[in-house]
Image (cartoon, rainbow, N blue to C red; front, side):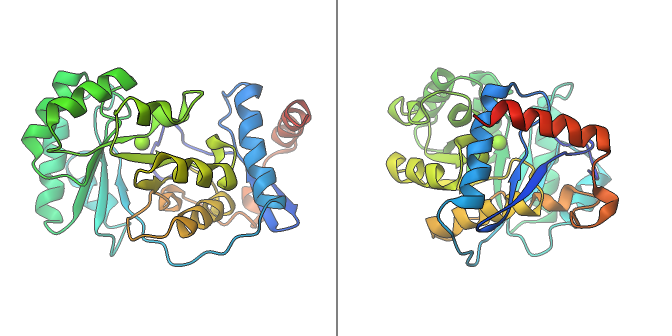
Amino acid sequence: MRTKFRGLMHREALLFEGENGWAEWSPFLEYEDDEARIWLQAAIDQGFGPKREVGEVKLNATLPAVNGEQIAQVLAMFPGMDTIKIKVAEKGQTIEQDLDRITTVRILKPEAKLRLDANGGYSVEQALRVAEEVGELDYFEQPCATIGELAELRARLHGATRIAADESVRKVEDPMAVVYAGAADVLVLKAQPLGGVTRALEIARECGLPVTVSSALETPIGIHAGLTFASALGGTTAHGLGTLFFFERADIFNNEVLASEERREWWLERLKRCFI
Ligand SMILES: [Mg+2]
C-alpha cells in the first residue's frame, strides 16, 4: 500500500482460475473461518457463477484521514473524479482536523460532490455537528456505529443530509435490518462480504435504496467482480472501486508480488478449512 489503509500496509489474496476466468478470495487475515467462508462463496460465484459483463462505471476518489499537503497529493492520484469520499473520525484525530480536511477539499475541488465516511466513529451529537458545519454532502457514510444511532441521527437531520450504511449492512446477519429501521437513505455494498455478486444483487434489489458498490481492498481480480456488480446495477452514481490507486504494486501477474511459500501454505490451509 502507498499509505496505511484500514491499518494495513500490504494485502494478501488467494487467486484461482474458474470457468469464468480468474477469481479472488481475500478475507482479511484476522477473520475467523466462519466469515472467511462467506467470502469464499463470493470467490466461487465469481469463478463459477453467472458470467457477467462490465460496462462503464464511474468511480469516486477516496481521501484517507490525511492532513495538510498530503490532501492535494492524494487527490492528484484520482484525476477526473468528481465525487470524493473523505475519511473522518479517525482514531487519535479531532473533529477540527476533520473539518479542516473537508474545507481544504472544498477549496481544491469546489465542483466535486463530497461524501464523508466516519466508519461508525462519531456519536450522534458529533455527527450532527459535522453534518451541520460542512454544508451540502452527497451523503454521510456510517457516521455512527449502531443502527439505532443511525436511525436517530437520520430522524434529527430531517432529510438535510442523506445517511449511507456501510458496516451496518456488512456486520449484521440480516442486511435488510438497516432498511427496516429507517436508518439509511443509501446502502454501501461490497460483493465479497455478502457472499458474491449474485447475492449482493439480490440484496440491492430487495432493499429498494440507491446502492454504492465499494471494494474490500481487492486486487484487480476482485475489483473486476465489483465492476460487474456496479454495471448490473446501472445508474450514474460513482462507486468506491478506485482502490487500486492505494497499491504501490497491483500488477498481480508479476512474480515479484507472489507470496512466500510459507504464506501460500497458510492460505491453502485456510482454504481447506473453509471449503466445506
Ligand atoms: Mg465505509
